[in-house]
Structures are given as C-alpha cells and as structure tokens.
Image 1 (cartoon, helix red, strand yellow):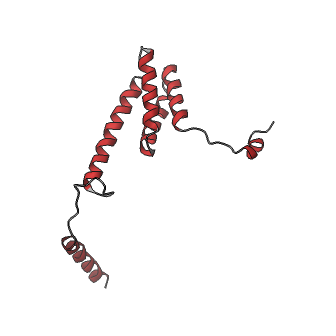
Image 2 (spheres, helix red, strand yellow):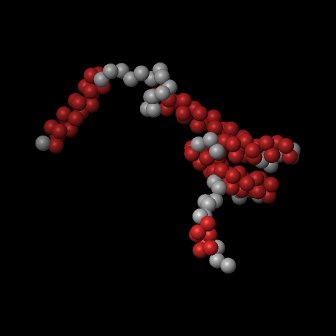
Image 3 (cartoon, one colour):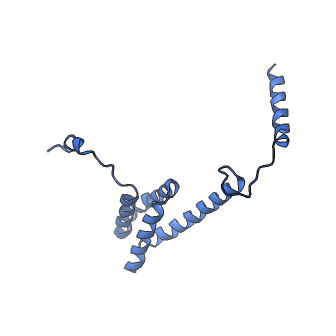
Length: 130
C-alpha cells in the first residue's frame, strides 16, 4: 500500500510542473523567483566581502580611514536583519583582536547596531537596585 502511494506521489510530482503555468522570473517583485534568490545571494556575497574589507581596515594607521570604516560598518549593520547579523558576526570576532583600537571600534559598532534594550521607567527601580 505504501509503495503504491509513493508511486502516485512520484507521478504527481513529475507531471504537476508541466500542468502548471511557467513561472515568470523576469519580474523582481516575486518573493520566491529564481532571479530574486540569485540576486540576493550575490548581494549577500558582495556585502560579506565589503564587511571583511572594512573590518580589516579598522586597525589602519590613518585615523580618518578607521573612523570612516567604523561609520560604514554601523550604516551597513542598520540596513536589515541579515546585514546586522553579518556585521555582528564579523565584529564579534574583531572585538577579540589583539590591537586595542580594533577591539574598541568593534565594540562601538556592536553597541550601535545592537543597542541595549530600553527598560520601562516603572521597572527601572527593580532592574537597578540602589
């Protein structure tokens, strides 16, 4: 009985796609379109390369380069959840760097993109005993 069920499912899977209308991957508004997924992966790779390069420059000899990289990492981290997680992972590794400048800048980026939760005023006295 189970074998017949599997055979029917296999035929349904093989025949069903030909019975459905073809998916239009040319529009960018489709949430599950192949083109959209490919573009998202490419964007993710590009973002990963950019954050890696910026993280590598946090210890640069020029203050302006270090400061610019810090601000760019904060801006990237505030884009969306995926970017925040990508930058967060990179900065978690960088905060353990042997160079104190890199470590402090990584902590600054993490604090900016993952702000501490706000405690409501009526709970503030409970959360911070005198």
